[in-house]
Every structure is written in structure tokens, then in C-alpha cells.
Image 1 (cartoon, rainbow, N blue to C red):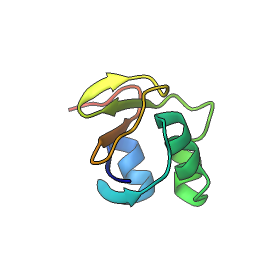
Image 2: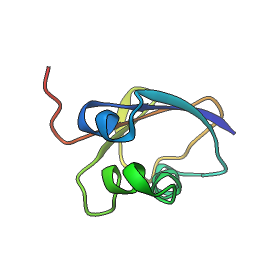
Image 3: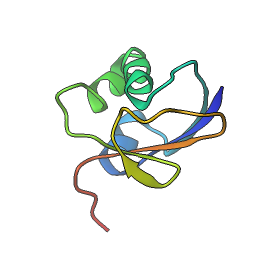
Image 4: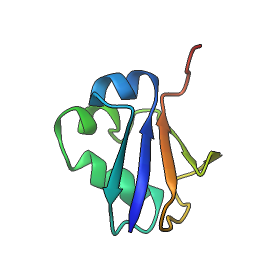
Length: 83
């Protein structure tokens, strides 16, 4: 399925982009995060397990157990995002 990813604040700075489209077979946000970590490099560091990362699905904050669906928008945030 195709989804839209958005990255904010320090995560955006680390991965070098604010958004991207992704084809994925991940069924949940947790599996998606692991898929991104497996890319290595900046993704592995910014989204590493043990780092505080907040996630939203279709502009609603949620936990990583949430199910993904075609066309979903997933956003990753550090725990504190300043204005």
C-alpha cells in the first residue's frame, strides 16, 4: 500500500526531508517504524527504539499499535516540538 510520511523538527533535520511517499506492507505503525529503522543511517538513529518518538495517523496522535491503511498519512515527532 502507498502511504505518506511526514517528519517534524529534529527528526526532519536528521533524515533530511519533511515528507515522502512510501510503498509498504507494514500493517501497523510499529512495523512501519521498524521498516524505517532498517533503512539504517539517519533513519535508524532518529527513530531508534528507546528514543522518545510520537506518532500520528491521519492527523490524530496515536500509539504504534494502530493499523495502517492505503493512503494513510503518518507523522513522526520528537516529544517536544517548538514553534
